[in-house]
Structures are given as C-alpha cells and as structure tokens.
Image 1 (cartoon, rainbow, N blue to C red):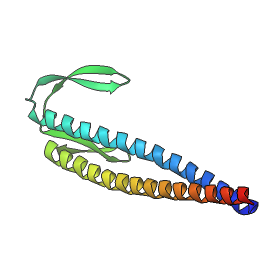
Image 2: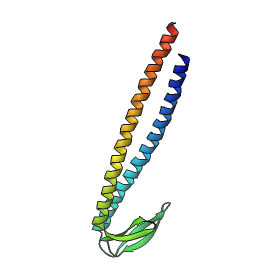
Image 3: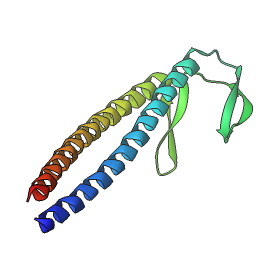
Image 4: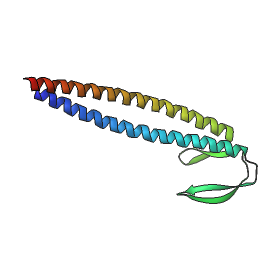
Length: 138
C-alpha cells in the first residue's frame, strides 16, 4: 500500500508542476492577447489621424520621440526575418484580429487542459486521502 501511495504522491507532484507550467503559459498568453488588442486600437487611431499630424513614437523603456505622420493610411508590418512590408491600416487590423483569434483558440485549449489536470489532481488527492484513511483503520 505504501508503494502505491508513494507512486500516487509522485504522480500528484508531477501534475502540480504541469499545472504551474500551464498557469504560467496562460498568463503569458493573456498578456500577449491584451497587447494585440491594444495594437489593434492603436492601428485604428492611426487610421483616423490626419496626414502631417505630430505624434509621439515609442522607442522603448518609456522613451518617446516626436514624429510627423505623413501617411496615416499605411504602416510597415514585420513579416519575419527582419523584413517589413507596407500594409494598409485596414489590412494590418485584419491580420492582428486574425492573430488574436488564433491566440484565443490556444488560450481556450490551455484553459481546458488546465481544468482537466486540476480535476485529475483533485481526484488523485481524494483517492490518496481514502488510501490513508484505509491504512489508518488497519
């Protein structure tokens, strides 16, 4: 009985590690989705801006530069390997929204997996509790 209980304990530890990993992945994915929503809003604002409007451009780490928006209907979009191509704001928004939908599908999958692992862990804890109680009655 002790061997069986020890195996269950180890399996439960592994489940908890997997739950922690999933929880971290879910958190990171939610943050990425929020950033994509923010990007979509920013793109829409750029599209509404008039040509030659002065704007602040983020350089990173809270540092901004003044710039003039010469063509608010077009942006450069990174397509990988440090290659950027011109896209209309509308095209860019559509691409970002498609990416958000894909990320939301992945998020749903991870949340379902987390729920499944969590249920398994609870079930295993109950099973181990029953084993301990049976052991105590002997």
